[in-house]
Amino acid sequence: MINLLSKEDKKILLVEKNKKITVILCFLLLFFIVCLILIIFSIKTYINGQINAKNIFLVESEKQLFQSETQELEDKIKTANDSFKKLNYFYSKNIYFSEVLQKISDIFPETFYATNISMRLDVSEAKEDPSNSESVMKIERSVLVGLSGFASTREALLIFKDDLEKSFDNVLFPPSNWVDKKDINFYVTFNIEI
Image (tube, rainbow, N blue to C red):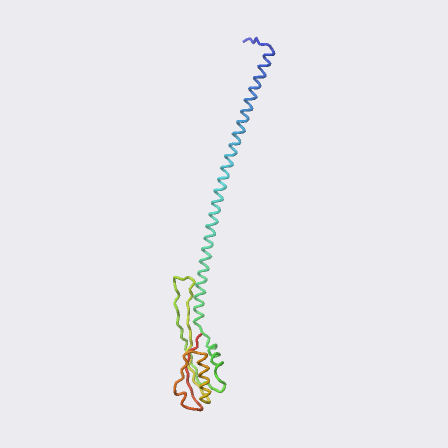
């Protein structure tokens, strides 16, 4: 084919052709950049979604771990509390008669002589309420004391009787204690609450 166009027209056509190619290349470059941005944005969204899912999974795992550790700790505490309740119950049933003797000797007059003393532990228990986890077994303990001895006078024995009644419960003197005025062999029973 023969080209009959002038050189100037050929230059104008060439410039227009180059402009069209430049516009097309710019459009393709712009399209490529937009696609690249969209791909990067979708990758970022996917990664953020995965990170959020892993964070939620991590938080739930920590909650489960904390709950299991808390439950395990609560179980250990409950076991320890039960053991302490049993130990407290065991030790509360024990009584030290030396303390009872000390209480008696604090009241016993110096002019009297004890010839015989007997002690018997009386324990009554209140059962633990199973519906109340904080309940504790209550134990009411008392010691029944039988004391026989020698008193010099009836008046001193009467003062001793009054002191016993002020300090202890259920003080019982048999009537035979009050027959003699001097050199009295007496017998008394009373309860000491522990």
